[in-house]
Length: 481
Ligand code: 5AD
Ligand code: SF4
Image 1 (tube, rainbow, N blue to C red):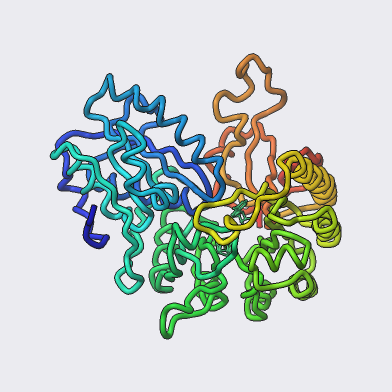
Image 2 (cartoon, helix red, strand yellow; image 1 turned 30 degrees about the vertical axis):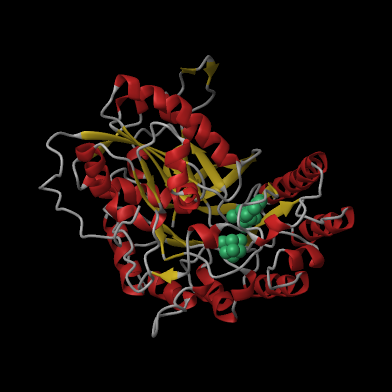
């Protein structure tokens, strides 16, 4: 199906394309980029009179926003589609769509494979979502729109002010990836790198700050190559400096980086910029040189460790995290031992670890997937057990320390019913306010002050840590920053 380029100007909010409020339910499966995209889909639909519902049975439009980085999401998506199709029997007006990377990868094939599916929409086509759904309703046809928009014509979907009082928000600064990691499907599903103009990034952050946001996470598949695709544009360190200068913003984080582009300018930014949090996610994938070569990561373990050492020399106490893949084709026990050694050497605050999953069309998919499933699972369990110990040590190092917390809202356990029976469990103690410290650790503060829940979100408190839990810290507020 041939459809024109994205992204037409959205219709103004006061002239909705549908006469009555319609309800949309979006299930987000996958990475932060997908969470951001789901928000932009909500924004586009809001302009056309839609409201969000948490109840899929009330929805006139159901979208599964998918990720194809590993095969798990595809399995989950297929089983969800099975039950969603049944909703159509009760609501013939229901439009069912798949968006995101699985949509991009499978395209029209999905329409053939999945009876009852109406829409397949790739990430570049988000701006056309309301128009396509309206056409599906009017013309009763099924549509796939997965064309990449050439980077010269690409327009990032515009973000509306958040309605939920969030304190921390994400801002996409670029899309796509020009790297060629042999295991990775992202360059196929998200296309080539396109940077959002720095003036637009700054304007988006300023808009968020006007609406109460105090922390931003700058997002991209490889933010360190920010600006390279635009003549005269700032580099990533320059962008960080521009965002750091925004009044009212307390904190900046970013994700994700490729070790190849970990420049001195970036390391200096960590040292210089007050708002840039001392937390760096720098994926290595494996501690074995030969596995890294097979992965076509274009860097080795030695140069990676040099970056880490320079970073730690410049920013003592910086918290690090990484991604690890186990069971890449050809990974021997010795290769795997190198990964274990690397984790012991770097002592990350946290890691994301995955079993290798061959992805269609990638170079690694041509290699024999020769590590038996049992061994892959066992290696994953060993990596995770080691990391659990290191993470516990990291958390324990905060015992008795004072740490700075940006409060976001009530801790999860309090949200439904503070101090009441919740699913048969009696919650102990007073309700808790929750936030994160600069190193991205969750910190909860019990409080009996009823006003805290309205007044603390968005403020930076000084918290003395009294208890270390498995995944978070507990403490008392001793003052404001
Ligand atoms: N199999 C397993 N993990 C993968 N990742 C990317 N592709 C694959 C794959 N085919 C992991 C990498 C990457 C993270 C986002 O997902 O660790 O850094
Ligand atoms: Fe995938 Fe590599 Fe690009 Fe990361 S840098 S998105 S792993 S191709």
